Length: 179
Ligand SMILES: [Zn+2]
Image 1 (tube, protein in one colour):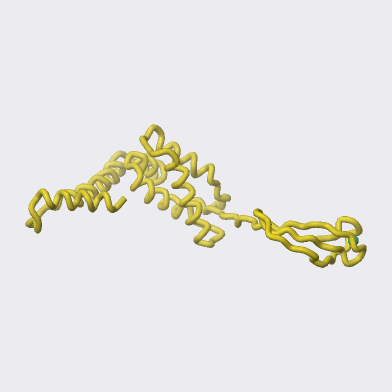
Image 2: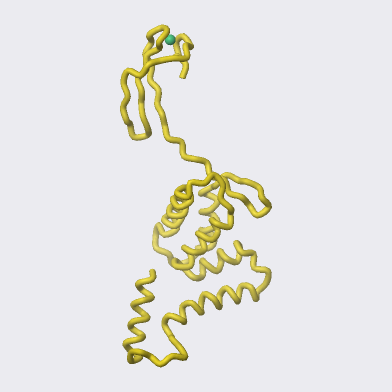
């Protein structure tokens, strides 16, 4: 940082203090002796999404939010659930420490979370994101979703190890535990 008074390029730090947004430094110009203050801030790293056609686009929280809101429209979700979902994804993305992330990775993160949040929202999001070609693709996804629920609550083909009512209760509590 050049001296704002004489333009000289070197200064010494005479005081340094941490403030909320970063570090504030009091400096003195080595040429004219003027004092001035600089502030260092952590700049959040840019994150780029690689699209299907290989284009790169800066990650946009708003864009992600719009897509998820659309999928969750009129669904009985708890207040703040969508914001939390986005927060989680954003945090996870930055934790990856990468500059570029394939859009598919983000899409999968959203799908995974929507699945445990709301089945209808999940299917809506999947139908846009996976670009279901026709109704049979959609049916397959729904079947998979329904199948994964049934398998927990209704074991078939095996002799029950516990009496039915106990088994049912066990399955129910296991289902609750998964959430
Ligand atoms: Zn100066």
